[in-house]
Image 1 (cartoon, rainbow, N blue to C red):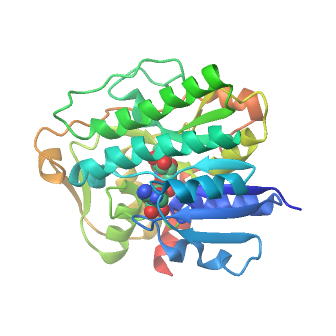
Image 2 (image 1 turned 60 degrees about the vertical axis):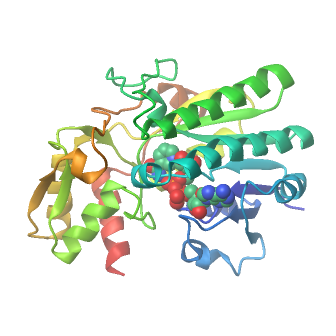
Image 3 (image 1 turned 135 degrees about the vertical axis):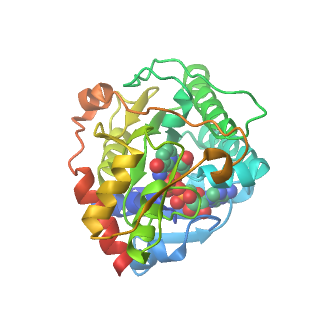
Amino acid sequence: MKEKILITGGAGFVGSFLAEELLGRGYSILAIDNLSTGKLDNIAHLRDNPDFEFITGTILNEELMDDSIARCQKVFHLAAAVGVRLIIERPVETIETNILGTEIIYKYVNKHKKKVIITSTSEVYGKNNTIPFKETDDSVYGPTIKSRWSYACSKAIDEFLGLAYFHEKKLPVIIVRLFNTVGPRQTGQYGMVVPTFVQQALLGHHLTVFGDGEQTRCFANVRDVVWAMAELAESEEAVGQVFNIGSTELISINDLAKRVKTLSGSDSAIEHVPYDDAYESGFEDMFRRMPDISKVEKAIGFKPRRNLDKTINEIIEYFKE
Ligand SMILES: NC(=O)c1ccc[n+]([C@@H]2O[C@H](COP(=O)([O-])OP(=O)(O)OC[C@H]3O[C@@H](n4cnc5c(N)ncnc54)[C@H](O)[C@@H]3O)[C@@H](O)[C@H]2O)c1
């Protein structure tokens, strides 16, 4: 009998690739998603697989979580309110899903004594400017009146609670901090920059760069990221630990816009939009973001295998289709 794995947020961008990765490793999957930002299209190609089961439901439904966690050997918890635009427009939903929802997951993985992999984010480093970020570096947040920090704080609370369950109750918890992760199926609807640029380039619209565009990021291919998540879940040494997962190929958003234009053969103009107009008055962004990946490399031999050009080309092909 195959080991069954629960993926919360399984119809999301990362969740759908993780399901593929785990099916390929011989597991059977139970994916649960409330389809708020996820889509059935993301998992359409998996629905006929007898090892893939999907339930539309919310992680806030305790009975569903109790039953589903009892039926699985491991849990990957990805369900969350994600995307800067969504966080600013629906702050209550963000905080409730990311804190209350994760509390419910911990409650039932602890009840059934199951291993859980929690998906955190590079946003937990906040405005810290000392790149590359090591897992032990400080979190530096803006004030609570700026709702964008609620996402980082909610994920930080998820980390605190996970580490507390590990230390106090010996629950096997692994925390992964994903840095910008991109690939096909990601939507630009909630403020994700790469799919937004690709769609703008293909439609001949202006590529809208927020701020002066000199902020830098590293974009990892989603397939590299889910490989690392699956490997860590199989490692006993990873339990009770926090790991950065991401690419170290640093690029400014101005250069990213130019790269997307070149690779898509687009002659769209690049337009700069002040953050205040793009999001909300007084919006604060992170100036630089880059992971130190030496810890995950040592643990499982992780090295990003797909470079940014390859990933952008995959995204261009996806949107063309
Ligand atoms: N993509 C990135 O660059 C990135 C970076 C850092 C962290 N992460 C984390 O990775 C995880 C997956 O993100 P993603 O990029 O795939 O985004 P996504 O929006 O595609 O995935 C999140 C999924 O959770 C689902 N969901 C939301 N609330 C739910 C609820 N109450 N019950 C059940 N399902 C619910 C959504 O419908 C969606 O399918 C998230 O936890 C996110 O914080 C992603």
